[in-house]
Image: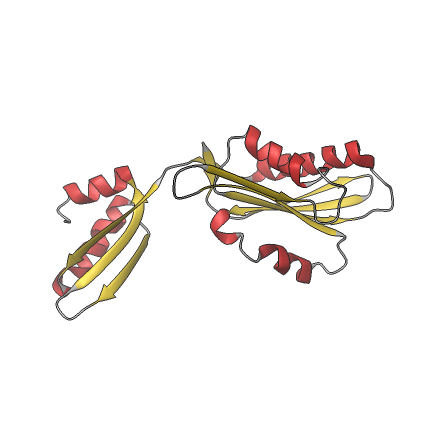
Length: 186
């Protein structure tokens, strides 16, 4: 399985219709369709397709045609994500109608092509399951812990400053967590 780690955009034109495609991590998806509708008020449709892993490591898929004929927009976009084995990814496509009707087959091909075009500019990375790890340190060890997190390549963490010390909640791959534990963090 593969995923993306940042936002990517591309523009595809088919028979004067413009397809602005945005590919993001699934964590950024919530509310993005409404945001794009406000940003592009003259766009006819904002179609999306998502694939993500739930808490049981099952792949969950969803798509929306947003007013396009049923199955002609979201499903072809979702099929491209399936074919590339992408997870924890959302793709949103803003369509500006160009005056020429594409037909259902042409529309399905256009939406699929729009997703393929954004994949051309995207950096696809291998998917690594993220593990949460919680531990405590003293206040004196904060700088040392930050250094160890940086050395392990862990950038996602939260700290809770308590009376007796700091509780850390970190998110990283199993490999990163194991390296951190071997470095002396318990």
